[in-house]
Image (tube, rainbow, N blue to C red; front, side, top):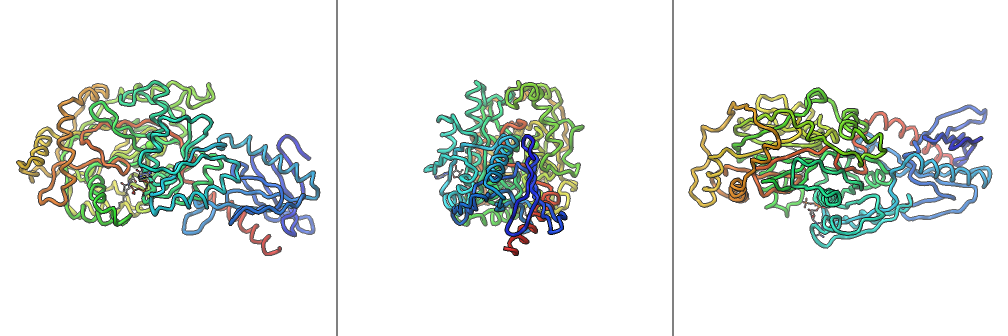
Length: 587
Ligand SMILES: Nc1ncnc2c1ncn2[C@@H]1O[C@H](COP(=O)(O)OP(=O)(O)OP(=O)(O)O)[C@@H](O)[C@H]1O
Ligand SMILES: CCCCCCCCCCCCC/C=C/[C@@H](O)[C@H](CO)NC(C)=O
Ligand SMILES: [Ca+2]
């Protein structure tokens, strides 16, 4: 009874008879009672089948095969609801089937394997894995070998593993070494390790394409290799924001089945030079200060962020700045439209068509000649000046366990824009309210001193008097912050094009930047407030204050699928669980 990939037959799970059907996209099995009536159906998308093995196979705690020649075992993604994860937590499901004959068993295994190949074209075959042995609780090696490697083996993925011996080893490897034959790279660590992957892969891709990363106006080439993140750090924000949970097994399963999530990347430039790339937060003021303060208390572990957050909050600082931004098209989406970027997000899908208009013709996302920035940069820049508690630019929601909806709950992972959040100076209780709203579902933008703009580029500079003032602070002649300057400065002006803006990053500014880079680092221990903060770029402190940021739509791809809508995914999984429980009871 088979046509192409379709296969249908009776199979047994334990003592129960099932009618099993492979339709190409789905593998279903329906319990049939003694009167031939259908009972519950379990349906697994072929794309979520991890592996198919002959015999009765277990892989945990270690691989064992009972070679019954009429049996086969199917491993697949099973959604778990434990810990309130709404089905975002994935586990390896396993069902052992018995066939009436060996011929039928071979037909099933052959058809299922062919269906996998046909319907999951992005499954990796060969991966380059970097483990940071010192990340987080220093469990990277153990996490990889006990939880991840068995899943890779089951899925037939061969991996080349490098345990790093120094910071930036992974980045340098990706920049210089032969990467032929690899489908993707995987980091086992935290956001810092992910950042190494990001810089290595983007840099390598631009080198090979002959593009200059320093020029913010250049359209960068998207990276051909996918990035997988196995969370094993003390901050795993990128993993949380793209998968929805911080769990090595879930992330390994997303890699194994070849999920693909494009991601916007922000390039940060100073004086016409690339400083860093970011996917999450580029933040000045509060978030920069918290990071700088937390560096002094690394020994506290992840608790250092809470401690430093409190200290910085109590220090009650605001900073003068000029923020210029290039708004994104307001007709496409808005940071206050109350939507969430979920798996299969329509805003991001429409952006793919806009960002890669020729991809459908050529069959590849990577072969189109992009002009996303140049064509859209015709829009006008907006300029605001005043004192800010914080200035944050985030390419994604930047959700994390501390702030489950994130810095900008309606931001999109892959729409080619970022959200610029301006928190003007306000009284301490107002700012506390703003911070507190990050932890709840209350709208953190519904406050009179907060603005949010969906943007394609941002430039930040310090008012000219402040540069000199900051310099004087270093050499000990400064007068500090002038009280009457706190609060709004109602300047909204229009300035020239992005090209023009880049040209205005002069050598003179760079000299002053270097002068102003350091005073904050001793800020909290000094009695006087510094007049400049530092930039927090995905958890790294930038050495410059005056920067230009530009968002590059979908520059990299992760082995992830964004946040799934819990209810739909959960329903299928619960049905599957019920069936498995019944089978176990009847054994
Ligand atoms: N073998 C190594 N020795 C020292 N540093 C390393 C090594 N391998 C990677 N690193 C660096 O360690 C930094 C932190 O690593 P990672 O992000 O994996 O862990 P983390 O615990 O989340 O980090 P953090 O301590 O910043 O919270 C990264 O920026 C990376 O460059
Ligand atoms: C009164 C309660 C105050 C609680 C304030 C909680 C605010 C939480 C906001 C978290 C934002 C996290 C943004 C993400 C940052 C990452 O990019 C970066 C890299 O890991 N992490 C850090 C710590 O900078
Ligand atoms: Ca975005």
